Image (cartoon, rainbow, N blue to C red; front, side, top):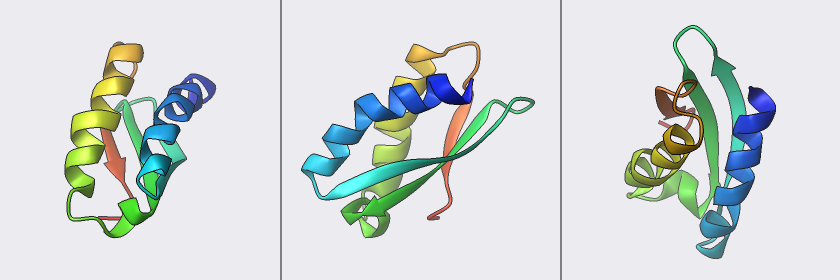
Length: 77
């Protein structure tokens, strides 16, 4: 499952890099279905980082892997 999550994150990465940020996979909990990521660069300190995380990253991962992703959290918050 981790490889599938990483593949989806690779699709999101160019969007974040365009704005000077980036994203790294940290972990996946199979029991809770929570993906933990770390936002980097401009995304790490951006006031809109939580909106990016929930509104974009979480939604895309839930769409791509609906049975396996319940939420996305960041180690930055």
